Length: 338
Image (cartoon, rainbow, N blue to C red; front, side, top):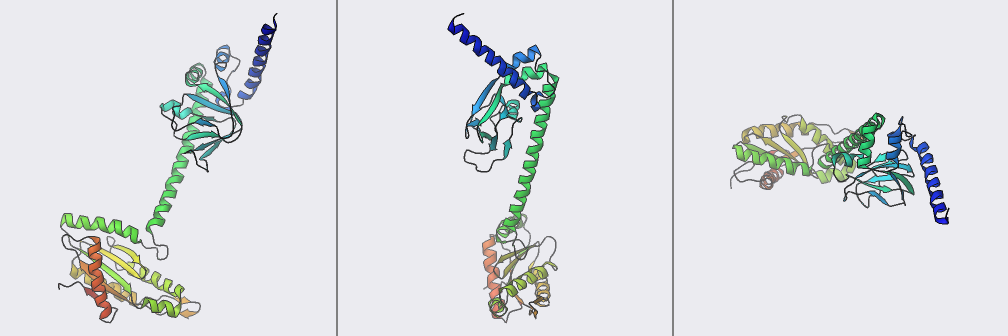
């Protein structure tokens, strides 16, 4: 036997030993659980698979490239991430776990990147070989179905968690942290849509602007915590007289806004007087052993007219509100024709 033939023979022996060793490892993987790896047909299919060594940071799956392989992590681990520079992975793929099965099933590019988190060895199964394994072995088909169901379950949990986070972000984006009322951003969106509906359907509409009287003096005298307490008491007191379809928001500082859909000016005056009276009788409570004095509000009302926007209605109601301030405060004024 020549030296070359001897070398080839030795390589074949080493290859056979490696396959035998790999079979003992593969038999413990989820994909090959209870699979007869020594079955001649299956053994032939395994021999068509290859091993791939990845260095830390090497890409296994890309969101920019089609995937035609199922990868089983043998050693090391991979990180699943949305983009190239994501520092926090969506998930970690440990030894025994698979990646790539979903993109094979739906014939689309992967929805996430998979990158080696450290030196990693994976078994690479071409999709045609995978389908032949599935056709030949009920156990492989069952195992693959289990793997996919777990992947979908995990994805559903991620989606549910993401939706919950979105709800929290939306809440913080639209709610005033101090009073618990809707904030200016919410007001700009919802009030504007209601004004457009009013004009489209030719309905009555009124906007009220409320301002706490002498609020700066209140803050200076009793402190900012007392001012916060006054703001909260006004916000809480103003809710009760309002109808379920009335829209209430903290405009900013010590100002509040109320939009009254399908309401004429005469009705708005009645609501405003109820608000003013209730707020003036509301007890802000005790702070550091000191009884806080009650506060009052000045209220201005503007009635919708064709062509009005939220900005023009706020401006008109502000004019009426300052008329209430100049009339001695703790009263209600409406916009009058000049």
